[in-house]
Length: 147
Image (cartoon, rainbow, N blue to C red; front, side, top):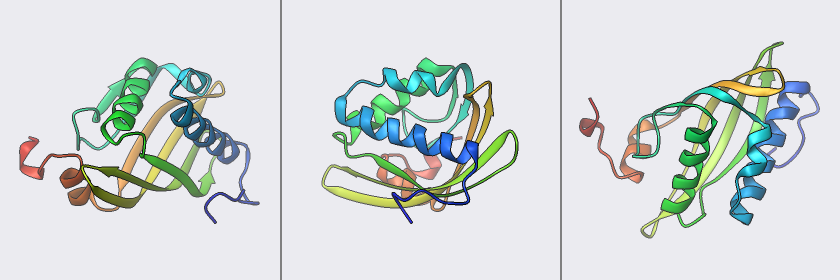
């Protein structure tokens, strides 16, 4: 189903798909300013703490910097796509398929991303990877390196 519109998606599912489409276009162009329309200025964004650029991020600029750093670390190969979504009135959970290459190594994975949307923007986000050990190894950190 990757790349197709889920006919069951409601407005928040379509919003999240549009965010990922904008992220994909921004990563090709190198300019992330288009993503500002999707992310609240005071967003609370919680990525798994698996690399120097991830962890608990506060504010839109921190999120955009994380995306820039992930793209830079992977030579622009860090790609994400929405597989499916389910939503409530204020939250949307999205199954995300992702891949990246770094130092001659390719990784693929899936994660569950949960977004809180308020006022037409992402107000909070939480990410739950399917294999945190692989993520840590790929991004250059072993599980023991983080408290």
